[in-house]
Image (tube, rainbow, N blue to C red; front, side, top):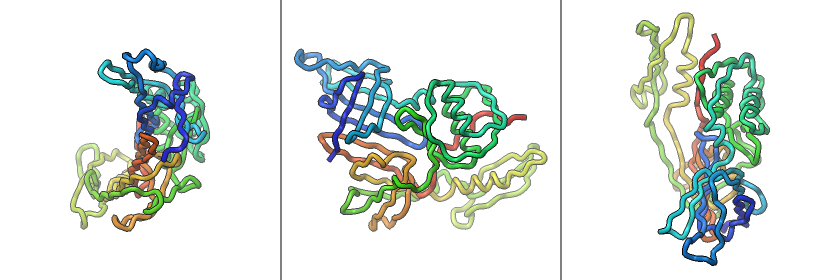
Length: 321
């Protein structure tokens, strides 16, 4: 069963009008989304008319804990329906929609994050430990999110960038106190496992800028055959380490889809421990996509899980010469 829910739109509690609601996120996007269908009818003069104008503020709380704070981005209503649908995003929407030009020399990823937030009127919150010194040009106009994600990717850390309340948080991907155990006869409803080499790379061929072959960096060619990617290596440059990273990040993939009872800790960037004997996959997983559905007093959650620490691998901008 769902806990006590409270949906506030434009300062008004509209919880009693909620027919269905979803709250979701994924590792490729810093903005979390909330979508709700609210009971409304142009034909019923006794039904309260709700203010659902685009850009109206929205907050959503579960058992007194605010889990979403954002704005209506899209509103849809029809004379053929008795509901109005609102699609909302948190402040990550503004990181995704605003393009900036920036130059950084010897800056930390945290300082770059704070600079972008300051430019956009956003509040930086807690961040992963960072002792980096980064130099990067962003001269062709890239989004604030791309700048921040690129900066953290350059540190080599795997992080999740998301808003918690009003603050932008950069969370290192690791097991912590918010790790939830999901198991049969407790909170697990169903599970399925997927193993794949689609999109895998087992060999990186290095060439110079004239097209002369230099060497191969091999992964698990013996097991899966040759699945090759090419890298061009400039003079006085060694891309062996970069090629090895490409192999490490694009090998055999194991993912798991879990349907379970709702929990506010089950969001993208957090970890879970799954105990599921039928699929044969148990252990520590990273949440790379989550969708919480609230309908008829029931709260169910669908999670896409990965054995690997998957983070958005955006690399925008250019090197400083």
